[in-house]
Length: 336
Length: 234
Image (cartoon, rainbow over all chains, first blue to last red):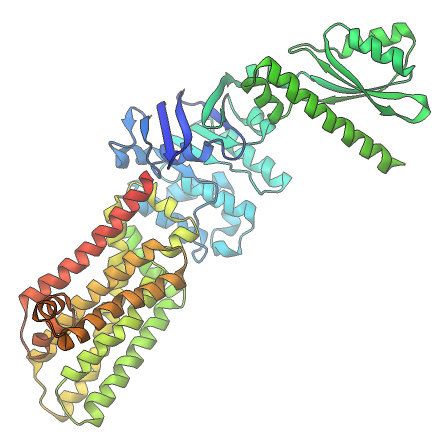
């Protein structure tokens, strides 16, 4: 459905996209993940025909967006990061305008009624857009993308700036839309992509660093690689045991906790879940496990994992752990 | 294209800008008419049209300043540029919407001339040719204003630069007469919008002037399209 091959975009001397390639199959919901400045919006803007690329190709249903922009654009519904809304218009006027703008041939009233029902805009249909909350504006943005029933939907950070309830609603809506559409959704929030998408493409500094099924990514991400364990036992012995423990890559003492217990940070080797073995080992030694806090992999960890060499990972991990140790100590002082 | 045209025209009257323009235009035209015709007790409209053309410099930026600037500022241009509409279609629709408002205001202001027919015997041909000439100049000015509006996100900046650009044409007209060098004088006269208008006020259709005004309009609309095209690539 969507083919991107060797896409490159430069702003002056700065290369924002560096020969990125991936495909999106029909009916798939693809998550486009990356930190700010990774090139997500640029890729989406090129796909939607807003920007041109310096090299490479972007095709929608076999139609090249640069060679036949009008035909390709008919197949796309695009919600940019800032929803493109005319605040002076009512939702109804705006959607009618978009309907005419896209040159749709279907029955206007019926089509817009369907979209309004799907996006739950009935209550605000006659209201001016400048009077709507951010959540509703985002819905209107999604509604305009749906006008004309395009096969491909491109949503650039659709949940940014929304409150948690609105985020859940928009995610639900996107999931429901995924049943009938091919969707590309960008985000810098890892769990969001895990919840909504079938597959994930991770961009980092303009390059594709991963292109995985969501389950595959979840295997990497969900295993708690880093744990903060609080153990009621002698500090030196416990630390020695942890450092020599099977599957443990790294262990360090953080600080003393109440009741004579000590907190340690422990990092497991990749793809290993050390929680159960750790529990049994401590039980054997007679050192009660007082606390076990899992620090699941965040987006930064995934980037470190995917983009750096083993040495770099060790260096970054050490720096990262120093920060965690400091944070834990600050927490402890604050607690007192 | 018609969707953008209709929406633009509607936006003029949802926001107060359309009403403000109509009121200002009719008030200015009425004021000039009162001074140059009613108080001067003449049916000759050459002074009226000449002064009205100068007032375009201030009034036309009112309707062109937001045409593109506003779209860029609010990011709504992303909607237009990702819709299955050509860039030239988008630019032309916006130009046409502003021109419709301008032409509407201009034609309404022509109602003033009824009083001339009531109390005198004006030269109808001169009124028609002067009006046609003014409508062509208006089109060229709107195209210039639209182009300037493509350059900035800020409406105020667009308005100021449009006034400055249009004023350049006025200055060229003035300096063309005072220029000592014959070569420079002929070039300035050729470029001047106002010098070319002289024949219209005498009841003549100057085809070369119409071609000049139309070309000016086309060139600035073309430049606006090219500017958007360039922005996509840079």
